[in-house]
Length: 492
Image 1: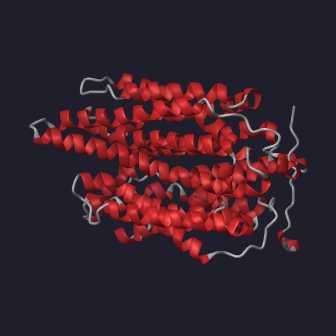
Image 2: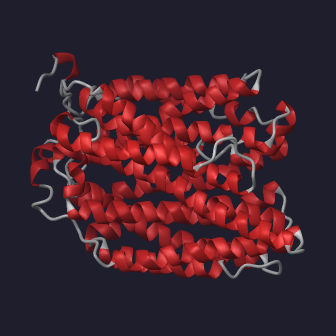
Image 3: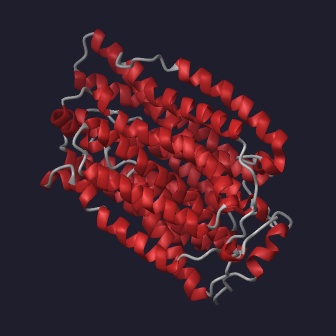
C-alpha cells in the first residue's frame, strides 16, 4: 500500500464530518434529481428540435448509458484516488454538463451535455456512501443511511414534479439555469470543506475489465431501456442484440473480477457475504418497483385520466415527500431494532400497494391514486434504509467502496429492468386491445393493469425474501474497527 503525504486521510471532527456529509448529501440530491427531470420535458423538446419520440428518448438513454459505464469503475476510483479529488471531478463534470445543456444550440449537443452530467452523477452516490461508511460508527449508520435513502428514492421521484412546475411557467432551459447556481455553490463549498478521509491504494487499472464493464452494463441498460420502444415498433436495433452482448460480456466480466481478486475493477467478493447478497437483491427489486411506477403512473394519469403535466407532477409529489419525511425516522428505528421488523412489513405494504394499483381503471379518482401511491412510498421507505445499511454494514472495510459501487450498479440495472418490464407489458397489451377495437384510453388502462399485475407478482416474492434479512453482526464488521475508532464519536 502506498500513499503520499498530500493524500493521506485526515479524520475530521464531529462538526467537520457532519458538515462534509451534509455537503455530499446536498450535492448528491441535486445531481440525482437530474436523472428523471427530463422525462416531462420530452414533448416540448421534440417540438423545438423537430425530433421523433425515439430520438428524444436518447436524452434519458444517454444519461443511463453513461451511468452504467462509469458506476462500476467508481470502486476502483475511490480506492485509487483521494476523496477530495473524486468529489471535485464529479462536481466539475456535472456543472460543466449543466451549463452546456442550458446553452445547447442543437439536440446532439444537449444529448452530449446530459452524458457529461451523468459522469458526475455516477461518481457522487458511491462517493457519499463510502464516506459515511468510513466516518460514521456502526451504531449510527441507520439514521445516516436514512438520509442517503432520501437522495436515492426521493430525488428521482420528485424530478418530474419539479420539471412540471418549471415548464408550466418557464422555458425548458430553465431546468438547467436554476440548477447551475446550486452546482457552483456545491463546487465552491467542496473546494473549501472536502478533505481526504480514505487512504488511497496504488492499484493498477485493468483495461480489459473496463471494456468488459462498459459492454456488459451498457449493453444491458440500452437493451432493457429499448424494449418498450420495440414493443411499439420504434427502435432501430432489436433489444435482444445489446442484451445478448451485455449478458455475454457480464459473464466474462464476472469471471475476470473473481480471478483478479484484490486487483479487480469491481471486487465481487462482496457477494460472499450472505447479508449483503440478500439485502442488495431486495434493493434491486425495490428499485424495479420505484422506477417502474415512476414511468407508468404519469402515462396513466395523462392518457387515461386526462391530467395535465403539472397536475400529474402534483399527484406524485405526496408520495415522494412521504419517503423523504420517513427516511430519517426509519434510520433511527433500524439503529434500535435492526432490519427485519422494518423490511418485512415494508415489503408487504409495497406489495399491497402494487396489487391495488393494478385495479386502477378509467373511473379511478385522483384521490385514490394519491393514497395508494403514498402507501407504496411508505413501504419503500421502510425498505430502503435498512437494506442499504444492512448490505454495506456487513462488509469489511476494504470492500466499502466496491460494495457501494456494486449496489449503485444494481440500482441502475434494476431501474432499467423495471421500466422495461412495466412499459413492455403495458405497450403490448394496449396495442392488442386497440387492434381488437378498444379506444386508446381503455387500451392504456388495460395495459397499466397488466403491467402492475406483474409488479405485484414480483413484490410478493420480495415479501418472502425479506424474512431472511438480518442485522450485520460484529463479526461482519470486525475489519472496520480501525475505520470507526478514529471517526465521528456517537453523540448521546
